[in-house]
Length: 330
Image 1 (cartoon, rainbow, N blue to C red):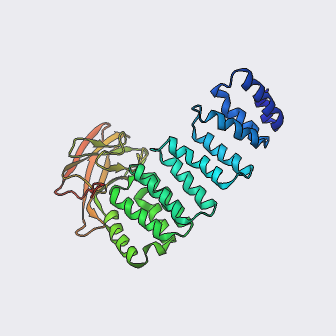
Image 2: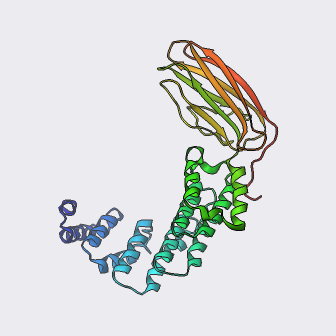
Image 3: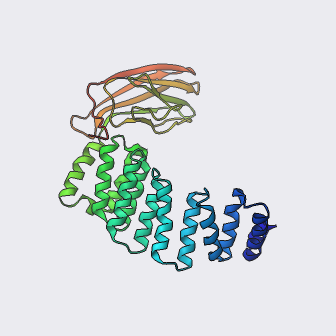
């Protein structure tokens, strides 16, 4: 009945029905969210605040609960100190979670607090979760959205140094990062911009790029790269621990399939092509490029013929003699 009332937009009725069920069943945790949501939709913010003030200290500590309590305080025009306390309570209870830090930063920005307070929370979020590559992108995009190019540059430089294999968050060939820098050119201005340009040049160079194409439609060839650790990067395992990445599995002819290794461990990389299906004579072309985009870039072209399903041939073996992978503490 209560959920039906919500569907019909009868929020006051829904709140009353949920409240009856909620209280008669001893305030079960499963009904906290639908009950409080019904109260909020009925604009009964005083009840929203009272209920959450009861259940949060009792252990109902979801991100939704803190967000809803904050919104209720805002609607009730509570003093800014009370709203801030609702926001920071989640940080106190979840000190190793980056999400509450981002919420607090957003609150500081929306309420006109000093900019440095929001920036401190963004930095703390990264300190807590340096392994979360998408977090860097999220913060960079927020910064450029407010034209805080100095801060965006700072976080991007931190990301480039911490994530030599870019964490896979900027799209194929880092196209999203290229687009962001093209749109927000001030990030590359000044002394800091010069340092960033040097980091980007190193960042965008690739130790090894392998591109497979072939000459017959309705055929399926697959690229395989066996790395020095014996881990194999292929359509079945598209990202390796070493940072290798296979972009796609083309199953109906021509390709391309591209393996990219931005910063590789030293050792031998064995490149193979498998004829998964199709049944006609096919010529595979494999372009192997070392140090692409950097100094001493070198490319080689290989052609091999395949005609039987499950036939697999070795194209070449490439040896990387040194390692440019950077640790987070360097």
